[in-house]
Image (cartoon, rainbow, N blue to C red; front, side, top):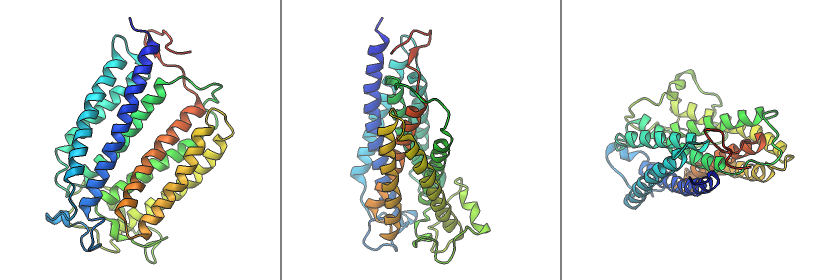
Length: 323
């Protein structure tokens, strides 16, 4: 029987490959989605959302080929990862994350059947969050297959980090809704939306992704304004909570490097968000903002793992795989 240590090394390598593929999928998907929506066209913002009328200004054929190729390869690698984690005996926790990855991939494959119609906001919303989920679960598998950090601090003192990561996830979800509902131009100003700084009661219905979009949300649209304002307030709260949590994590040797990276990414992400709006929703900046958000969430998850400590992976029967 192959040693658990050798299996873990193999699982870690496969998970790293899957993480890289997931990032490619995320970037290609962002380019297709944002470019198809009209970002980057010369007639901005008049061209925004023309895909809803059957017109697509930006050619994305190359990106679509890259996306489908990377997604197909990732699915194969995902099956290999699950097999390596489950056979001949399940090795935890990688087996659990590998199974979750497969379920997510199958779900996204099913949702992809409905993604050709841009009017389906729910399909775009699930695809955006699903792409981030692929990166998170792949990287979580990498961390799970690695050795446990020395002198873990345990669960105490991670409440602020938990809250910050939850708010970051909510911020990403709100950003996904802005894209899925074609609401970018509803609020092209900073810090508020013209003279409005709190969502109107009529705008809260925009939080429902299970709708069919007939057209873009125009300037000042109540739903679009609500999404933008909520996205910005959640981003501000995330900056404060993750900033403080990151500074605290710097005091712990096991988490210091990850916390430093998280703090840098946090500042970069906020800057990208401001620049994206200030630039009139530049395609490149919007893509970078989307990618950085997912990388920041994955890094925050790594800080959590380092702060709390993680038991070495083991075969289900209890045979330790690492020491």
